[in-house]
Amino acid sequence: MSSIELKVEGMSCGSCVKHIKEALAPLAGVEAVEVDLAAGQVRVTGTPSSAALLAAFDAAGYPAQLLAATTPIAGKAAGGASGGCCCH
Image 1 (cartoon, one colour):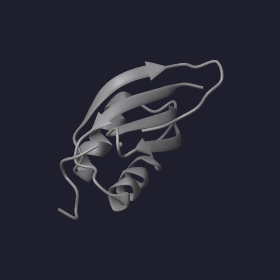
Image 2 (cartoon, rainbow, N blue to C red):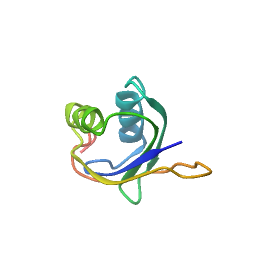
Image 3 (cartoon, one colour):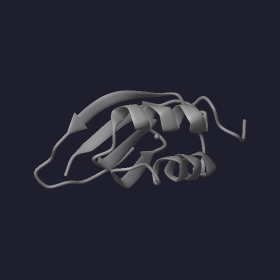
Image 4 (spheres, rainbow, N blue to C red):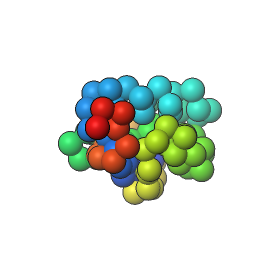
């Protein structure tokens, strides 16, 4: 299974993590979303389009940048950061 890692700005709390997961979960090809709030990274597992992911982050108010796309032999996921949170 493949995964895409992104650097995400604007995340600062659990509510931000929830918003990100809700924004990405309905996208075609998304099987799992893991957020690492402290690192400001998100890992999306599945086969989503990078363009669709970036558009969803933008629409949710969290600017994102692709870090890596991988196809691990044995899959695992993680991801989260700062700059567009609703609680600022």
